[in-house]
Image 1 (cartoon, rainbow, N blue to C red):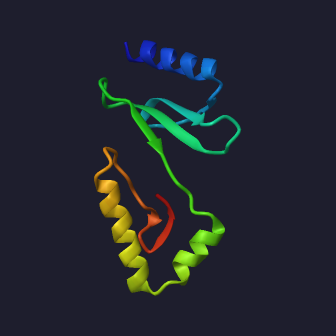
Image 2 (image 1 turned 180 degrees about the vertical axis):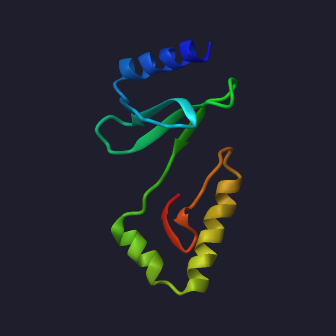
Length: 110
């Protein structure tokens, strides 16, 4: 059943012109890379975890531009933490999960 659903999702992504690639992922039966909008270099992952028959994970991120990253990192640690806490609190009320990567002290991806 899971393979059928994954193949339907892949076909739909291809038909929409947003399917980019299938990724190797030891934790997933299927892991698709989606570029939305097409040719934008903005990617979404569609993941079918191996350990869950009833779950599909749709994950996206936001990469800070070099200019914004440098501006954020130029702030004092206290001011940077204040801004990052504000972002985290706002994200809490969006019905999604989030991570700051690679770490809170080096926030390049949200």
